[in-house]
Length: 114
Length: 115
Image (cartoon, rainbow over all chains, first blue to last red; front, top):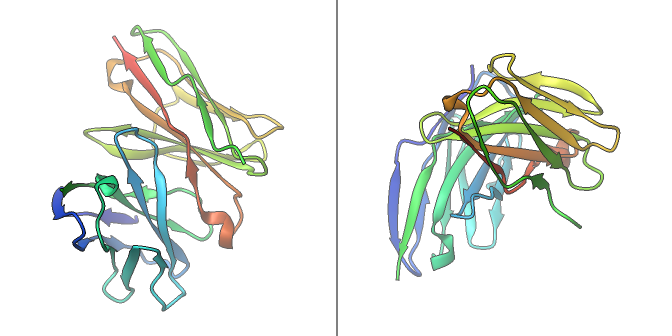
């Protein structure tokens, strides 16, 4: 069974600084996708970034980038120039190419200090 | 383009009752998935519907059921409610195809409280 692990329950970052959120996963599949979702206090899950397993290049979306280490099954999210609006819960998620079910990690609460 | 719409946003029900939650996906999306979010268990997959057929199912009892209509709108039903069913229920919409279609977009959720 596929599992997603986020071992840090909470992190804090100073505004304008950079923070990295960790995620590891376990799978025997070769075709899969990884995602980071943000859940602010409004509870709406917002897609931050996605990574296809077959792509070696790390995905980037503006201030958000990932470090995808396929052999180590690691998928961390780097947030640059942190803003107060980045404060939220962040979830790492996995799905295979064939099965639409998303498997989520437990999430990490990120706070941003002004 | 309108996002994923879930109704109602909040519900309070009594143990033993049943409840129906609704989800309208993004226009053109044929896949609708449902998730239960609780502080203790986190986010758990309930089921997925694609073109009116249940395509995947999570490990939930038969009290949890769903359906999808021809316009892709989906409903989920929970019968004989238990206190442990109190949760945020999230609906996710996607194209349901490979490649770009793998991205799932979520609604704001329905907060169900069972008393």
